[in-house]
Image (tube, rainbow, N blue to C red; front, side, top):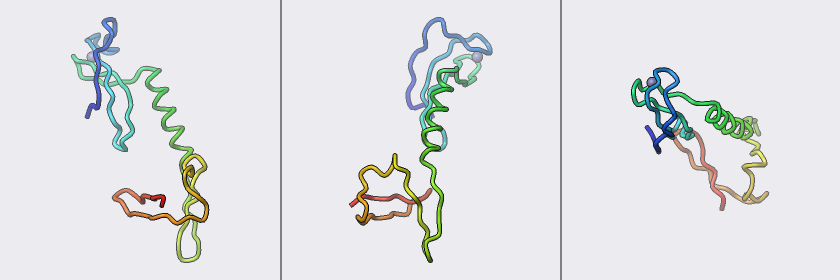
Amino acid sequence: MPLRSSPSRKDDVCAFCKGMIEERTTAFPDGIPYRHHVCLSCGESYLDMEQLGEVAAIYRKIKRNRATVSRWGASIGIRIPKALAKGFKVGSEVTIVPEKDGLRILRP
Ligand SMILES: [Zn+2]
């Protein structure tokens, strides 16, 4: 589902059929938005090198936020990466809320 669209430059044409294209921002199934071109003639959707670089940068950043689940006695633990730990105080209590795709950690 397009989140935003804007008219493309006049000289932008489809790389496949030379039809007119426009740039749109759409979200991947995981909710991450990305810019891409959509051909108004053949309907092809594709990314140019700049847009591909943006997507790669987003996923490189997300990859840094990955963590491993460890066993702590009868419970499990996750070490929160430094980039995501901002705003959490060591020793403070948090609330963990189950959600459809995981857990949400709420600061006090
Ligand atoms: Zn086309």
